[in-house]
Image (cartoon, rainbow, N blue to C red; front, side):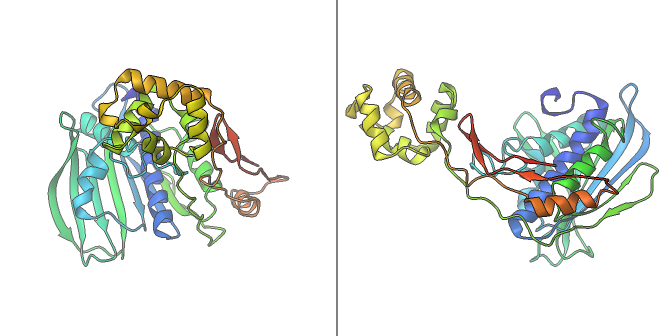
Length: 341
């Protein structure tokens, strides 16, 4: 659990909040919905671990909701993300975070996530507890029932965990919330942290960020093991077809350059299922030694100077600020966008 953000009671609370909020923001943007998110954190008792409190964390959104049959996978299964390997800018990729939060709740409080979900097509919302079966990496749905809910669509997720609340400073909840508000000018958020009053932050733009195009990975960003694992997604096709369809910037000229560096047509025509590790190693080395076009920058997401300026202004009175947004660029064969305020 330490490797995924649960290395201390303070980080456990922050990570749980962050993962739930990230899911809400991504879901709203994909569905074209202006996000409205609420966060409530309450101390409800003494934790089961030494020097911890029992913390209830509730995150609710107005997103598209989650289908009942997908709840167990979303909250109780690792590496189940639809964003994994998509080659597209998003807040999460691997599908680990929110399942790890469920696991932490289960480990420290013996109960996983409590979820209410409703899609636009559902007349009633589904309410259920999701636990993680760690041995089989599957989610388990318990106490499922259909309830009336006044929201037309959305998700409410609740975790009760051992943790400690830090409000200010590096790693503090307010610092995280202000940062999230800053880079999401289209977000309306309200939050209540422990005994403090509710705070509301209204959006400053009605423009939903345009979801960038998904791009294939650039082969120069891969290590040998990743290269071989990536091939498992492509079945019994030939090595040449795998290179052309599994990666970006593999053109006809690139294939010719591979041959000039010693890659034979026989190996290129060989089916992936017939290739040995030595074959993959040879292909991988040739690809790495060949100069290829830089990857496309279309997969990155920009906030924009105007929207970022408005977002800064809603954080409070600022004597002076300046915003600079650079054009997307390539760093270590990966597209990046830098926006500074």
